Length: 118
Length: 140
Length: 255
Image 1 (cartoon, rainbow over the protein chains, first blue to last red):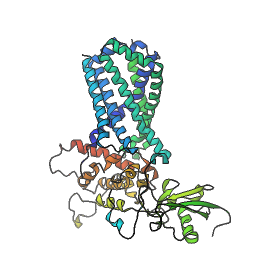
Image 2: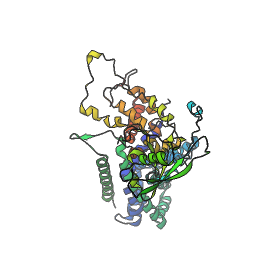
Image 3: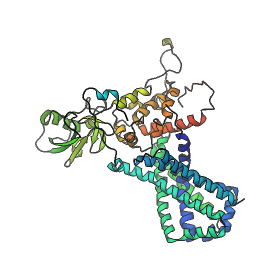
């Protein structure tokens, strides 16, 4: 029987799932609700100078990249399998859309985070 | 899918039932589909962040436009929905996590799945508080 | 036989290949007492109402694994389910899901049997052992590592519960993978490497999406979901670390 390459995608799925399970809710709260509304945290927390400095620092850069990348690879794997659950057996096309999409997001994130400089 | 050879012998005519709508047949399956659907929330947040870093890379004007979008009532509403989705993802993740682990024993007694889930949820709450604390410490 | 009083309507999905193009529902009104199982209800139908009804059964005590069927949409052993649970409503019975229907409540289980044989469900010694070496010794802890997975009665309720098996029967499935794990986790066994080939395939553990319903319906608390998903970790370890192991090394240790 042919060995499956699933472990690669499952590994990314697992890492992304764990990261989003631990940090997802608070990240959404901080970036999507608290700071935009100035609730519990000031609006200035996400001002351009502060966020630029954050993204230019190696720690901030890595953190944002890891979150974007692992979250999207987690989602791609799950969505691909959910299509199968719904009876959509796109095979190669489905794989290309899901994992290809995740790759696009990853590369765009990488480019942006490098483009902001150090 | 080809029929096993012995099915054509002896007047057998097996009837294969449809899987259409399988997940609607039991609440257990509906909950499973909801759990899997939280992947859309995780994807959505990743894309929101991606839009952010793309804007950041394009300069102050682009960033402020993204920020303004994030402050809009529609965005706040969607983020509240995303928050609910993320929380359910977190809960369902630790609910299923014990299934991936071999049996663990502490003091001769088997550690139950419920205990493992509880530890996971406690870790999630701790991580959330730590993240908030980090943001708090770094606030202007 | 039955005391005066209670009856329940049992709706059965009939299928007679020689006369039916497709399955057809037939209702029976069955008198019952609180101690009667669904199996006994079916036996009443066959004995008194309709001798043509076909269904599998044997031990009547939830150990042979013969009487699995869909009872009100859920995979259950008919000998372990009671009519009183459904009274005063009606009860719908169908052959075990995700298997083809041979006749009435008899499911075609050829596929399961083929899969059962395919995983080498027997102890493969680590090295040849002579009779004068005596028995294998096993500590209670070593027993505990596989005992729960040895409780499987091959009733196939987990296959009826598993939507991935229903969607694609190439999937080896929960029960067979649990049995595979039972042998891998047994300290007497050295056949892990041989079985890993099946585990690592797409039809092995990688068709599972951790729905978990298999473990919910198992009448013997085998927890097949645990067996399958634990082996995702083992399979991933095998995938990433395979180049680190010296060629020809036989990993007999069931870690």
